[in-house]
Image 1 (cartoon, rainbow, N blue to C red):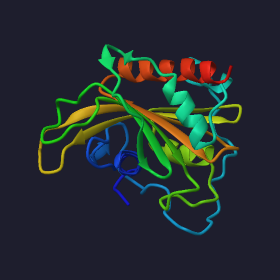
Image 2: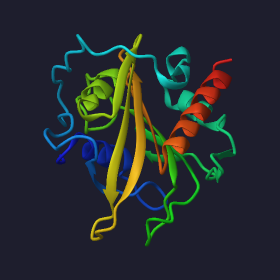
Image 3: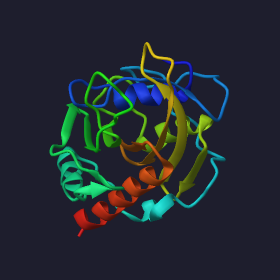
Length: 219
C-alpha cells in the first residue's frame, strides 16, 4: 500500500478529485519506514490486539463527546462547524468524496500548485462502506493500528487517538512541507475521523472546533 503507515493514511484519507484533497506522497518524519498500512480486503481479517495499548487523555476532552455514526449525523455535526478556523475561511460545501467519506475544508493551500485544495481538512470515514480496510475493523481498531508510527497516541475509554507529523511532497517535485494530523475513532463504532493542517496550532484549532460542534449537535 505504501512505505509507511503515514503514507497509507494520506492515501486513504486524501484521495479525491476536483476541489477535494489531492493524493500526496509522504514519509513519517518521526520514525523509520517499516510496515505498510492496515491490510486492504473485502473479507474479514482478525483486528489488531488492543491489550496493552497505552491510556492517555484525549486532547480537548474529545472522549467526552458523542461521535456521529451515520451519514446524516456526520452531516449535522459538520454543519455546526464555524465559518472560520485559525483565520481560514470554511469552504461552502460539505464534500461527499465517496459514499463512505465526507469532508470539510478551510482556506487554500498555496503550497500546492496546479490545483485547488484546502489548507485544513476534517474528514469522516465509514469503514464498513469502503474497500480499503477490513469491513470488520472498527474506527478505534484502525486508529490503534496506525499508532505504531505516531508522534503521540492514547486510549481514553473507548476512544483511540493518534497524532502524526508527516513530511510531504507533491509528486514530481523535490520540495517538501509538513502536514500535522490527528486520527480518532471509538472501538465500538465503524466511523473514523481525522484532521490535517499546515501547523500544530491550526490542527488543534480544528479539533477544538470539531469538539464544540459535536457538543452542539448532541444537544
